[in-house]
Image (cartoon, rainbow, N blue to C red; front, side, top):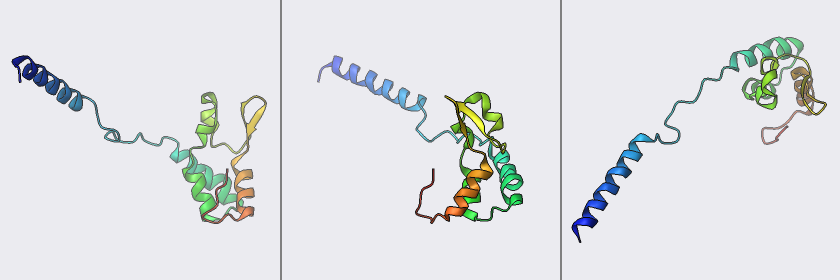
Length: 115
């Protein structure tokens, strides 16, 4: 092996190691805090439980599904309000109680998917 090949190999190895340590592995960073979780918990208690929704799977879904992700950014602050919220093109997202009431009436099984 020539001296040039050894030098190029060494440089390549150094660059590879530098890159490996400089770029964090996927999943190495902590997950961002769920800033909407407290609002979702309040929504469940105030708008669902207090109005009679009892199905634990329905309540858990409303506690965990990031409702704000279905909204335009300018309406994020209303994600947990119990009202229709415009989502564009003349459409609205249905109020949480209405969705919870209909979902509970369906009595979905753990293997069912409801959208």
